[in-house]
Image 1 (tube, rainbow, N blue to C red):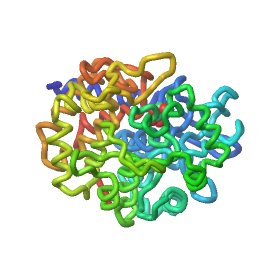
Image 2: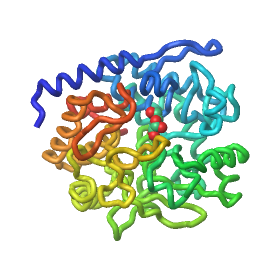
Image 3: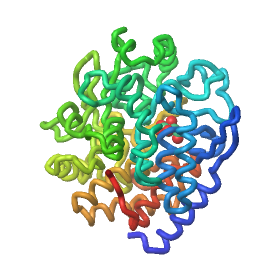
Image 4: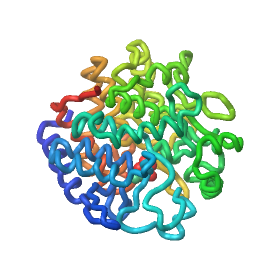
Length: 398
Ligand code: GLC
C-alpha cells in the first residue's frame, strides 16, 4: 500500500501538470481558458476532458475550475449545443477533416457530442448549475435532439461520442467504420452528409446507440440540475439481469451489445442506482480477477474478453480503450465502491492507481497488469488521481 509521501508526491505532480497544461487566449474576441489534455498531442479543448480537469482544479484553484467550464459555455451555439472538441487556437488541418466531425475547416467546434457531464462537473466544482441557464439549455438541446425513444435516454451517432473511441464494444455495431478502423472516414462522411442529425441518421437505416457511459453522465447531470433522474430508464433499458451488467442497445438491430467493458460498470457512480444492482456489479464483476480486478483496475475491457489488449491497441492506427486502465474510469467505479461501503476494496483500487501514477507520471492510460504508463504524457484528466489520493472533499450529487 502506498505510503502517505507517495500520495503527497502524486498531488504535487497533479498540480504541476494542471498548471503546465493551462492555456489561455482569444478567438474572434471571445476569451478562453482551459487545460490542454496533453500539450502537443491534444492542443484543443475537449468537452469531457475539461469537465474532469475542472473537477481536479477545484481543489487547487477554484477560479480555474470555473474558467475551464465557462470556456465550454463560451463555445455554446444559440440552440444550446456544445461540441465534442472546440478549436479555440487553430483550425483543424485538411487531413483531419477525414476524421474530425466538423462541418468545415473554419468551424469553431465539432458537430458531435461527448458524454454530457457539464452540469454534474459544475455542481462538484463550481456550484448550483440551475443558476446558470446556459447549462440547462445544453440539456434541452440533448433532450430535443438525442432522446430518440422518448424515455429520457440519449442516443449517439458514432463511437467517439461516448469518449471511448475504439472500444471493441462498438465493432458489432459499426464494423469496419468504427473509430480506429480504416473505414471510419466513411462514417464521418456519411454523418456529415446527414448533418449529424440523429433522427435523419436513424431514418436512413444507419446505426445509432443508446450507450451506457453517456447515459450515466447524463443522469448525473440531470440530478445535478434538480431534474428527474434518468437512472430508472437506464436500468429498464440497458440492465441485463441475467448477466448482471449494463450493455448498450443498438438500433436498428434493437439488441443489447454484450461486450464486457468498464462501461458495463460505470453506473456504479450513480447515487440512485438500486443497491442490489450495485452489489452485483461489484461482487460478480468488478472484484472478479478474471474480469476487472487487475493490479491497476478497472481495465477498459474485461480481461476475459476476446478483444482485450492490455498493452494498448496494436497496428498502425492509435486505438484507444481496448484494455488499458484510465484514471477517470477508476475514479467512477471507486465512487461506487465507497458509496456501497466497500472501503477496503476502494482503498486497494486507489492504491493501485496511485502507485502507477507515482512511478510513471500522469499518463493517458496504464497497463492494468503492472501499471506501465502509456499514451500521451502529462495527461490532464489523470489529475483525477487526486480524488483517490486525498478523498477528503465531499461529493454533492444534487
Ligand atoms: C482520445 C480519447 C477521448 C479524449 C481525447 C482527448 O480521443 O479517446 O476520450 O477526449 O482523446 O483526450
